[in-house]
Image (cartoon, rainbow, N blue to C red; front, side, top):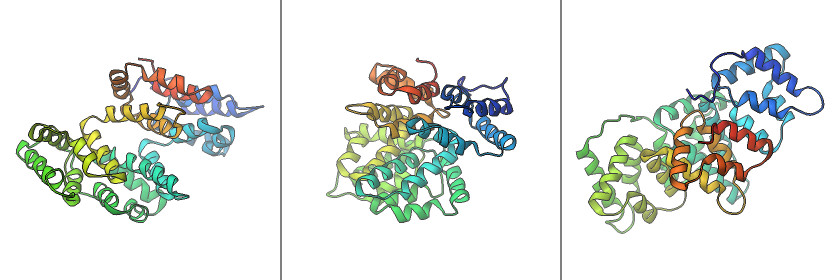
Length: 321
């Protein structure tokens, strides 16, 4: 477990009392809220919610919603659930939006990122919570809110059988690399069915080996081949699966850099990635960010954010290095 979280000392009851005091009076003591919540893991946060309701007959999430605002409110409310519940909430919200074309595309990219960057065991947990929480199967919402090859890939990715073996059969990997070459660069047009099958049926370890062999056999990276042969949300989904098979920490480091690059900051992506990866692999992401951009992720976030929102994200990131 990360040193970010407390493993002893303060009880959930004491935390609930401190948060209640932070909410009292004129204005909310946001620093106290940040100090407490950013140093509690998912189990501890759930215990705080139960204790707070038992003591004050009030849902702490509703209280946080009323006391906070803006990017800080979004980040804190996203942080409160456990990782699988959070993923289910992000996917449901993203698939449920469709106010205009631009919003729909961005939200579908968000849903695709979350789905295609998760491991099979994580997907199984998300699916269970999704049905329990929303009384609809994840596949049903994917069917209704996506289309074309993008839909086919997502449906295949979230459907069993799920393969997570770390063992790789090199002969089969070579066969898959050849099949992908025949399905894409070797022919006019793309055999999407073959591409989808390999990208969704094979384990991460296997797909990473396929990518290595593809480069050795054909002199071009599988990533470049995907970019050349596909487009749009289908391309984005394939690249997410591939990059997370090879190095998920590097994938998220690049996503964070893109969110902070140029004029203005994409707070939605910045918040989502930091909050969802803090309890998973943030130390690896920080290392990959430093390696690729020669700047601590902490410094980048500090320069692109401000106020209590900045303080919250930096506390989640932990030490500068």
